Length: 355
Ligand code: SF4
Image (tube, rainbow, N blue to C red):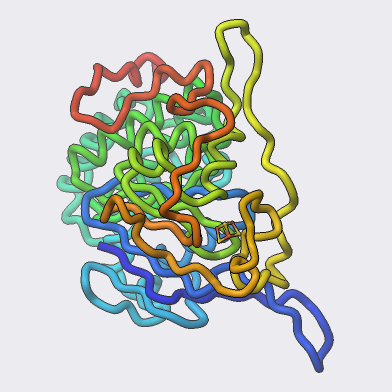
């Protein structure tokens, strides 16, 4: 559905007129997202996740490389200009407080994209608005209210309804629950999973919460300093990570044992400056397994020998390593309300919050 080939994005970061400094957000990154899957992209802050999301959404251009959508190369800026492309790719932002127009009633917020994308005549638009209200479990009477009259979770549901209004094929979710309380997070995630299953939409989910991502994703990509360093089926990546960076990210997830003690190994070292990305393996300054070859030769993103659905950019990718902390799937107390991404969904309690 989506493919990035050798994507490069740099930003000017000061310097002199003789020598400009460039911050590298995406560094020859290649990535494929399959139709209808729930694909998650994880990594520390500043690794380039949100830049990638904005490029796929057509909000920014690539400096080099190619973006393909549904098998067709997308010329620069065309998503932004081409109305049909904009309809097919929609984005949900992190902050539900600033992503809605405070002067518009909820009903009008939902009508706006339908009018803009030529959904149909007035009765067809009203019918669709009623459908959207049902999907997000909003009573029709609430459509006359303004965004400030809703909680953060309810606003994010309005933003989701607006994004899916004109039936997009790709939904980009940039940290959609990181600003919400834990209990509300579960409801928003449930809603996204329901939408994916009912509408068959492809979801590109950006997050730094590996615990959450491990429960909801079909496939996952791990980003470090503008590159994918590990990618594969979520079950394989989380149960048998083959890149040391993925392993330390998983080890850093806080868990609580039976005694109520917090476990988890903090991630050592600082992320190198994106103004000066290390040569050869970009993770070698923080890697406990680094050896001579890592400073000389850059590891490619190649398949792990035992599987064809799991790739890692590490010279030691074929050597399984036990994780330091929890050997079980990572877990944070209080998130049991999350459903896994299977068809065995329980009834949602979204209406309760709206009431
Ligand atoms: Fe560590 Fe070397 Fe693998 Fe890089 S290539 S992640 S430095 S072992």
